[in-house]
Length: 292
Image (tube, rainbow, N blue to C red; front, side):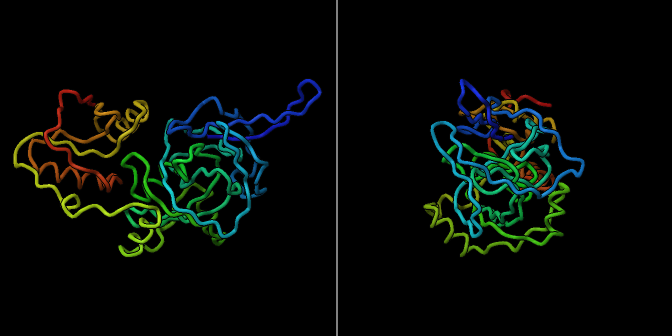
């Protein structure tokens, strides 16, 4: 996640050394960790604003720029406790609960409005890191930002990103690690238009209808899925959930429940914990579930 460029003299030539642990192909890579850069006595500050020179990772060159009217549609994922305390690209310590993000080219720091095209929620986010280093995603969000957007359910989620210039009072709230109130929620018509711009086709009605669950059986309420077992275990331990490996991912879930009614109550419980996109998995094989 942290990123920096420093000059190193080698053989009479000046070389640029790049450090980061941004996400590459969905995984944050410790090979790019920059080490420790001491924070100033003032703590977190918006000054100086850093843009930086072009840099190359994985054969792709990224050119930071001060684009005032930046707007993009893409996908966002999130990262959390596994990087707690690491340095971000502008030298701050990463706090999973803060509302922050990593972007490849925007100035550090800068402020963006992020709208989840799944939930319609829009929040103000502070960009203080570089990444993700994959063309598949536009942003990497902190856990705090993902929670506020309601997209902790794992995987990449479609988003709209717009750069803004908020008032100093709002900037100060995000610098302190606290959250601001959500912006106005996007309406269904606007979300459908944005998803269309991104190339997401609406699902047939037969797929959007709520599933009818049998009255008896075994159920779990899935709140997230990860390719990383460590991330799944960290989240499960934090919220008192279970994990199991299914398909190609580690799934974090509450349960098991023995009736549809209990499962729906589990969804309500998950929502109270901030997981508003939890889903019910019917007839889950709980024998493969690891409990905490």
